[in-house]
Length: 114
Image (cartoon, rainbow, N blue to C red; front, side):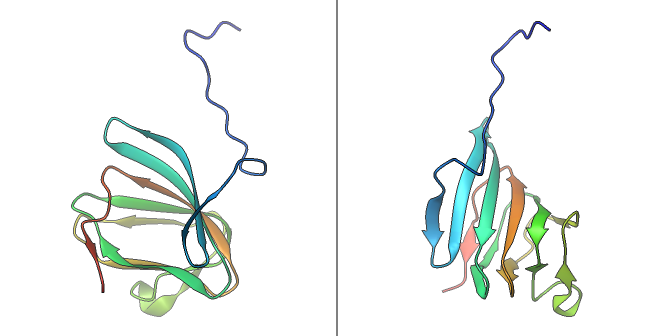
């Protein structure tokens, strides 16, 4: 095979994850052209604070159990689940047992709860 451009390969099992907040680590997979794809690893009982985006935000559950208390009465979402948050939607990422999610967004959060 002949690739026109170099292929970017990231192995989440060996890469250095960055501490984002207490119990939350992130691994930036791609951030260019105003878009980002980030893996968030949320420890059991931890979460990402309430926030909103000016543009849509997409979440794909890679492993574990993801819960957004504001979605479907705090329903637990397992691996393979996909959530689409329309622009301006406030949301929160938590996990009772730990999870890894892929977050695809075109902007950084515009509002965080204090």
